[in-house]
Length: 147
Image (cartoon, rainbow, N blue to C red; front, side, top):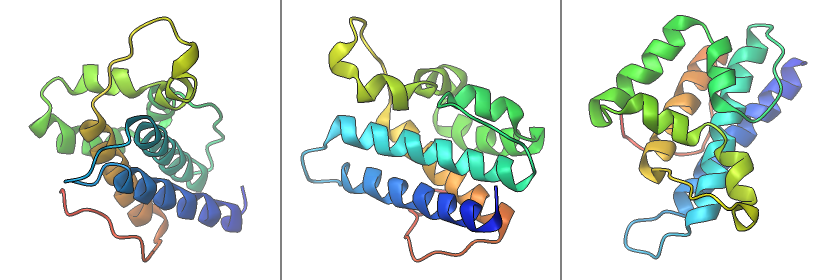
């Protein structure tokens, strides 16, 4: 990918993060499925930006497969933030793995899906922060002060 394409993907990662937050504002009726789809796509794009900036080609919507391609120190950084609040980090992450695909077509699925939107939005926050640090990106999108 070109630097311009990477920058565009980073902007989109932050935009989908912001959209997920807006769908899940405290005090309002949460809009579940759109929040899940936006947050999971934000994570996917942020991870892809990190990988593309390291010259790693990647495709697909499976978050676990993308994370396996990341440098181990980034995976550890992500885990260290999340495991404090979610000791069942591995299971939470597994529940998010195919969220972008599964939740877009939730009306066609015969199995019960289990996902923690708070975990997913926090994962999106962390991935966007790491992405911005990794590529030296600045944005006017407000990230939550969750860290």
